[in-house]
Image (cartoon, rainbow, N blue to C red; front, side):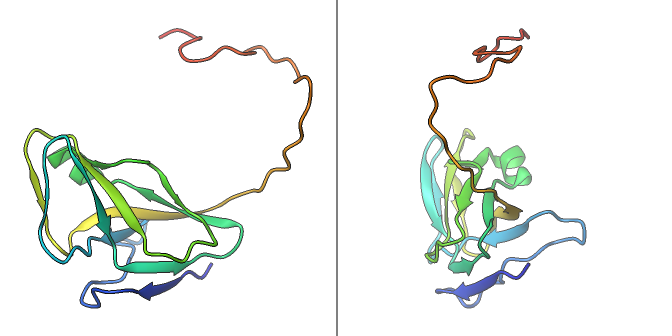
Length: 145
């Protein structure tokens, strides 16, 4: 699968890349022009400086980086975020600080990861009834702890 990447600004930053041969996702870099202060309990929108073209039938999922979550309490809202195959705007990530102190995000930090996956388009059919299952309408916590 080929994914085309366009730099929108911050040409000094690396393009997304797999950091090891076994990596599932490519790392995205923060393209903020100045240091970004993320107060404890607050969230910010972080630009990545890139746009992509994904083939039809695929999506990109944006996910947090585990090291930032463990060490600083930083994660992403709207996780996983979806980049649709027809979106051509800048990829931005919503970073929230769940830690107990502020975090200063520097330009060029690896802020998130992006995974590419297939998607199927469903044919949605309205009906008056659904087939029965053992679970039925059992929702949150219906099987116990």
